[in-house]
Length: 116
Image 1 (cartoon, helix red, strand yellow):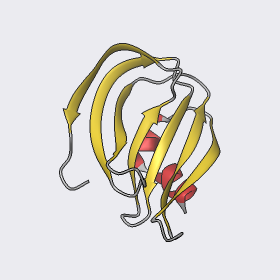
Image 2: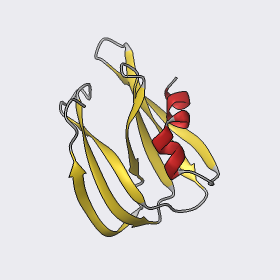
Image 3: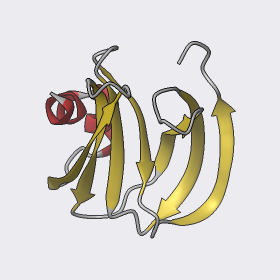
Image 4: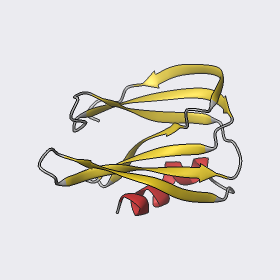
């Protein structure tokens, strides 16, 4: 379910348009009672991308509550994008570039959406 939602999300499709994408490193989120509530999957890209990303920020150490911040920046060397899926919402809630990405300009916080 996590991979399906990540692969079909309109924003993910927009940033990966025209690229060959492979999926790896599926990590599931649980609620502390072993119920799966979401997850993250890494998408490896055939060439670098640039643009906006939504970062998931964990609010608690158990990683069950999070906030989302929207950034924009010009990036290079983005070979992998981590896509975060909340199964309770049935939606992608964030995506962020790999740690090897080089930030050319920015990042600039665009918004921290309420209720996410």
